[in-house]
Image (cartoon, rainbow, N blue to C red; front, side, top):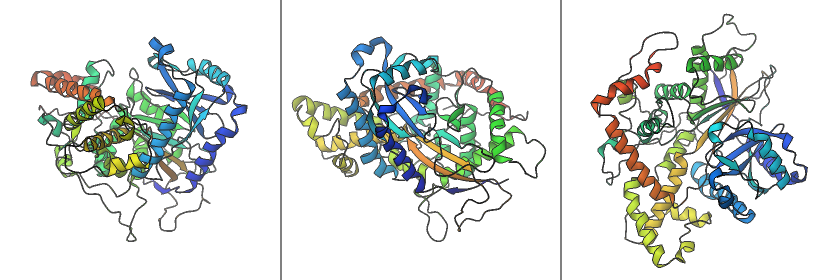
Length: 521
């Protein structure tokens, strides 16, 4: 069975903006009971409105030093406004107007914030409670709720929209001459980082997901990449239904049971009432249908020529496969088709590749800037080390010379490029889909088969905060730790233990044996 999709382009953007701007108008009517816990990351907590398609993102601070680390109202508002400016003036031009919603900085009533903090505390995961919500500044970022597809109505069966959140991570291998460890040009950062996180207790099981498979443009590799994210979501894969999270990371869960439960949620979307298929379909079939829809949305391009054949981007120089990937060797060798120009993955990958020197090549330039600022601290403002994130900052990123002329301006340009690339490596993609009724308008250029499920969809990018200038030195140390740990871990005498860590994934859902092959490096 094939699922047909078409774009909800343009309309949803206007609705999102109207929703966002309404935050300011209703501040005097804020009631904590109108909001519910939505999720959180390392630096912020998100609540969503129970009726309207919008969310509030509030800052968090460590419980160990909450009093000292809290920002004043002015500092917090400036911090959030920087996020808005960076998203609007830097990331939106690079990633595309159609994908980025920058939101708005707002000041909330302090009593509302305090009551909201008490309300959501009991819903927070225990692993996240080492930090507390900012209840002193009253500042927040108001954004559209991208788990909702506001522009289209649900079909007559009243099925709520689905939204799939994916953190794709870095989609290329470094080809910089500054790289000193050959393994970095063979195994991607995500796959190496998995071993480091397991060793440090972050996760209990290795993920089989490899970003290079998702960014390959090959539908078979991309489908397998999404399948591997489903099997081991960690913090990189979530599914929402009507704005409620129905599938996410659960390190102690029975993975197969969770996938069966997910399939139960999905069956009405892919086997609607009136379907000619009367017998229950296996979970594997239903999940594969969702995977096909996700891949189609990720490959969708708003820049197709009149011939209808999407233009493909050129593949990067050097390797485009990861030696740690467990996919068949022949599929890896022949499975790079390139991404359609201007699809969401193409825009993200192009921005990630602003990191052209790798952290090893960037670190000496960072030190050059540091030494310059020690001599001339007032130059920090001119070089826009801490912003403002405006057109001038974007020009520094886009117009950095290709060759090092020894100047501090070149070094700053490369540091800014690296920071932007790191934002793109840590962003999230939101794919919102909703089933269509029979009377919904269609794009006349798309052939629709009435017997197939049909969907409207939108694709957005979020989590586009600026990475701190000071984080460069931390990234340099972390890179060294990850690579050295991976080299020790993948010695031949450790391979049997690695196989055991992923053994539960070595059996297909229908009980068919499959083989996991580990390649020593």
